[in-house]
Length: 86
Image (cartoon, rainbow, N blue to C red; front, side, top):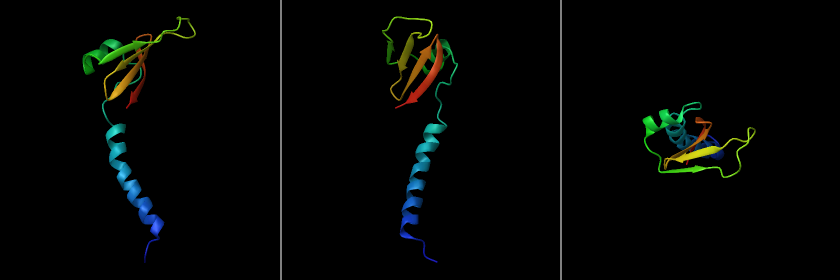
């Protein structure tokens, strides 16, 4: 039985995508809720640090971003809010 031409292209694309997701999905990154001290102890000093410049209000707290080159960590009130992989 011969497989349709489109099936082989879909299968090859799916097989190429597996290594990418396996490396990024299970990699060691800061998780939500970690404190700034825990992140700094585990990952070291960030390459750059930036903060939101808008006035701080209770509804919109200051956001701090630590850039580690391969990923950035977003903090709110000293706790990890998100980690973004570059």
